[in-house]
Amino acid sequence: MSQKEIPAVEENKKSLNFIEQIVENDLKEGKNDGRVQTRFPPEPNGYLHIGHAKAVCIDFGIAERYGGICNLRFDDTNPVKEDVEYVDSIMEDIQWLGFQWKNVFYASDYFQQLWDFAVQLIREGKAYIDEQSAEEIARQKGTPTVPGTPSPYRERPVQESLDLFHKMNSGEVPEGKMVLRAKIDMASSNMHFRDPILYRVLHIPHHRTGTAWKAYPMYDFAHGQSDYFEGVTHSICTLEFVVHRPLYDWFIDQLATGDYRPHQYEFNRLNMTYTLMSKRKLLQLVQEKLVSGWDDPRMPTLCGLRRRGYTPQSIRNFVDSIGYTKYDGMIDVSLLEFAVREDLNKKAVRVSGVIDPVKLILTNYPEGQTEEMEAVNNPEDESMGSRRVKFSRELWIERDDFMEDACTGCKKDEDGNITEVYAEYDPQTRSGMLEANRKVKGTIHWVSAPHAIDAEVRLYDRLFIVEDPAGEKEKDFRELLNPDSLIVKKNCKVEEYLAGAVPLDSFQFQRIGYFNVDADSTGEKLVFNRTVALKDSWKKQNS
Figure 1 (tube, rainbow, N blue to C red):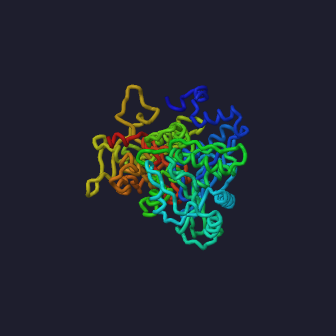
Figure 2: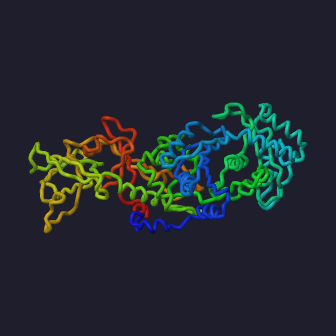
């Protein structure tokens, strides 16, 4: 049963995911004074992708559903990789998905509070300055089965650590020369408790604070405290942070002065077939010009999906259909494609577009005559109305639809390619006029040649040729790129109704698929991106 056929009462009884169950139980028990507050905390070092959409939907969705608030907080603790460009794109993508934050915060808003907390830990003998190299620190941390060995600086006097900590931020200490570490338990079974690094030195201007800071907090130190400073009740993240949760709680316990505590909950991240979610590898594709940019329609970025023609509702429906669990798995990309087909089927105007045109001349149709026919814009939605479509002696048809034995003649070029087709016109085979005792071998679509508009059509397919490109350890991921992920058709013909189409408008090209107008379109030529074919033919081709 498709989603649109599910009765409303059944939708209302839809089972809650485990995070919603936690929130409802907390509300029933009166925790957090009945408050629900979440946050979406992206690092501004890349564009959001479909995996982030899953986090966006749960963070903002929980707040919406239970009358709470969700803040947008940029985790900008690493000036090496961060840029204002990414901040702007993240905000645009969240709003495009249909969500709105209550407040915008930055981890850098809390640099002074985090610094003060770090000073508190040093004064309490719970943190020290370590001058070992990164390699030495890694070696002395031990292994999951072998306890770590204490740093030779672990018992450094408090005042000495305080003095050095201030020097770390004054510019006197070179990068990599020293770090601030928490003093917890070098024998802990949880490797994150083995004196984790809290601060490191970076002599790089920050996109918001400039050169005010030289010592920057690490993610584990900044994240939970930022939640606490903001009043977050439910800190939702992905499963890789399960092992970080005890450290998250330890820091909060050192900082909190009352009963309030934010709590961290983890869900499974999105892994999808034929797709890479690594921002580092996506950045490589962009920098090495293997794709046209972050918004290349083959990319899993939200701006790429938007440019390709995916709708916000289709992505939200997809995320809702796969759900949230406590175990990782692989989601078939065909489920995302199904979601956009289902959404566009209800919204997209049906039009005629010819991708590989050949001219058909109806020899028994009067020259110079033009007829107009009524065409329904979308049979799924009568309110979308209809339009007038022109029919004439000369038509453009798909080359694949040409059958030489059904024609009265044709022209070919020197290479044997069909350039022109001749046939006779039978008005009784027109749509809606076919007599009950008459049958046709098939249906073709066409565009009146004198009224056609030139267009370029970009046929996009999956970016990788293997189901799990991240799991292919023997090959570089760039070797797994699909050479047919983009095929450009430059001499296409579309009906004149599309003359007024603007970027991001979506249409169904009858018998072909769903397409949308690309921003590269000009007044002289429209450019269309194939969002998705009408049916999933990938598995059949690759089985």
